[in-house]
Length: 259
Image (cartoon, rainbow, N blue to C red; front, side, top):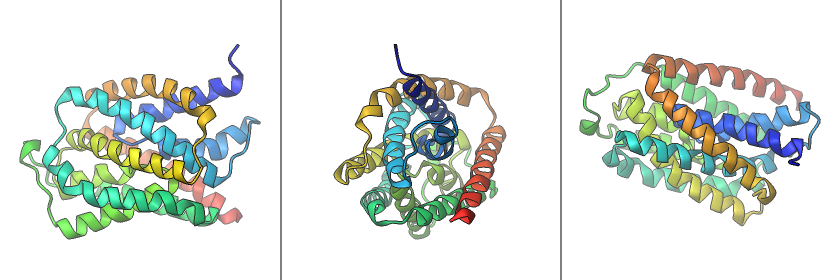
């Protein structure tokens, strides 16, 4: 019989992957607080923040892979935008992934909070979206790529793939409609997630005993989230983004005050 602990891991992964499909995020941003707060609350093993970054990297890769496979069917991925922003994202993701081992837990929590705040601000800034997503192109490339590098560096340190910043950046600076930005983000983040996962392996932070259970949850969660993404309006998707960020931000801020 499957141990209760592993059943909970599957459901946590399913929930994180659901948001991967719904919002184009890698799921790591949900896994991070789940392992930091939920599992200890339920009386299970407590992980260090560094160990959680490895778990987040595993979830991000699994969740975004299945989210990408589902979004690819919709044909809304803009390859021109992917090529324009991917180099900065790759450099930032790799740099952050191998830096995590040398960053304190409090610093990581502050970086997580900063990432949430920036992403929430970006997603709330109105943008003039193009009617045709294929006509969209990168505007202010220097500033945009600098933001992407910073976001993926922080995300890579935490074990994420930068999806929480990519979606609002593509929407605001590339004028991609929200749903096209989410679909395009899944491809960019899939590539970043592979590199971050490799970086976490190199520093010994991947939980091999949990991988199969994370994948099981990711398969079903990503499929459900991707289907719901096509049904909800862009406004509702924005509000879900912001709501998640506010809830997580408040909890992380209270944790930082305890240090």
